[in-house]
Length: 65
Image (tube, rainbow, N blue to C red; front, side, top):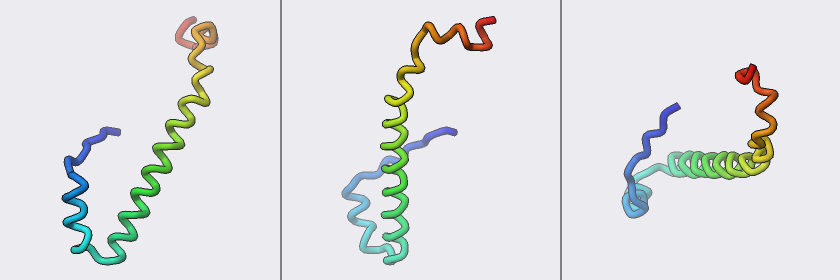
């Protein structure tokens, strides 16, 4: 999956918001909420699985044999 960030400023978003319908604003809000929630959960899971980074555990990797 590739990530291609869009270059848009907060000021540009503020300018566009009044032109959107209520439905579009609610959908945008939900998408932002979903994105933030996913990002936070992903970041939290990275620390939860950091113990798996133990080099001694590499003996269990199939690539080693």
